[in-house]
Amino acid sequence: MDIEHPKRFAASAPDRPAVILGDQVLTYGELEARSNQLAHVLRSLGLGVGDHLAVLMENRIEYFVVVWAGLRSGLYVTPINWHLSTAEAGYIVSDCGASVLVASAARADVVAGIEAPALKVRLAAGGSIEGFDSFEELLAAQPTSPIDDECEGMWMFYSSGTTGRPKGITPARVGGPLGGPTSFTSLLRFVYGADESTVYLSPAPLYHAAPLGWAATIHRLGGTVVVTERFDAAEFLALMERHRVTLCQVVPTHLIRLLKLPEEVRTRYDLSSLRTIVHAAAPCPPEVKRAILDWLGPIVYEYYSGSEGVGFCAIGPEEWLAHPGSVGRSLLGTVHIVGDDGKEAPPRTEGRVFFESDRKFEYHGDATKTAEAFNAEGWATFGEIGWVDEEGYLYLTDRASNMIISGGVNIYPREIEDVLILHPAVTDVVVIGVPDAEFGESVRAIVEPVTPPEDPAALEAELIAFTRERIAHYKSPRSVVFLAELPRLLTGKVARRLLPAEATR
Image 1 (cartoon, helix red, strand yellow):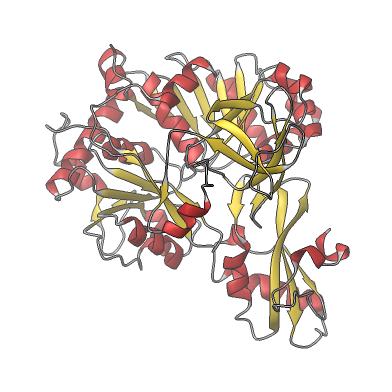
Image 2 (cartoon, helix red, strand yellow; image 1 turned 45 degrees about the vertical axis):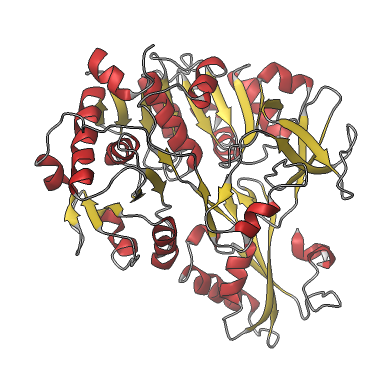
């Protein structure tokens, strides 16, 4: 049986583009050669099967060289959000136990100050960083043949926790035979039609689990991955036409921005090659979904899952029209809706969404958080509230936690609250998500000030700037509301449900 790995296509179609980014093209032959060279570098530096590799860089060609070197060397590979602060990124590098960090020179401001006990090697791509070895020079000194002990590696993605600290999702064991079949390659092949002819367009940052996981799976199937440095709605359509894109994956924010383009722009491009567009990561307003279906036709698919991998629901265009608002039926793990009494709820009754799955997971170094994800039956939850209909279609209605989803990105309030409470003008603060027409939700801080501000707008700007200096900008509040006193429970904790409506709209 043919292996599912890019090395297969490096042999059969070495000149086929594996990655296209702007005017740059990385062929399968080049991906094979350069990832082999880096694999030799990693072995020469003492990294063996089961060690950890962290990568922090913007979307660039080298990203795929790095991840495929790790995945063919039996390493755990952890992508890190390059928008994070040095302290935030350093926490992940340290927590995952990375032995090597590969970063781009453009991210020197983030990575230069990172200290982690297990970190032995630092490599800089695309330029120099003080204290880092040259990625290009080390590769050039190595052979392009495979290492002797090639074996499968694995992702170790990080998912933010309710405490605000990101938590690593402990993956399956590494070291298996290279290119064995996986459930995810089967999913993309049989549900979304991916094969050697696929041209996959990803407009999202590669540090996210879905874009990187999908792109790597397209490489296992022999297709071409087109990535962008950033999302621009009109350019996204132009790339579809230019590269005859057949498959793309987006979040609802992308769809909203595409729909906001003037009609003459949206109709300017030939999108006839597109066979499948998939969206996930955040709830999609039904009116947006209908508008996209009206525009692109019955090629819009949706799924609901999580990096923990214990459940996966999917829905096609015709199904969605018959079950508007649903995220589909489960393809992995039976769905159970559990009420507050711990018992399974009947159809059309809201409760916590659980998946019954043979697959188990752990949050790295956090037994408490791991235990909270499972119930007494051993079913696992991503933390959402929802209901199922009589046919088994799942509808999500709320989140059990206070998590904010903005533009498909998970944001947890406590981390932001812990920063804002340090400001001398703040007595207490609660951070919530408020409706946003473009991003789904945006971050709002509701502040109890020490004294009523003489100029609320000026203090709002000051608090936003204060937060942006300490954590990633995308987590920072986009608005601040001041209340003379926050509503509290008898315990003294802020009662989010009692916040006045005018503060939460």
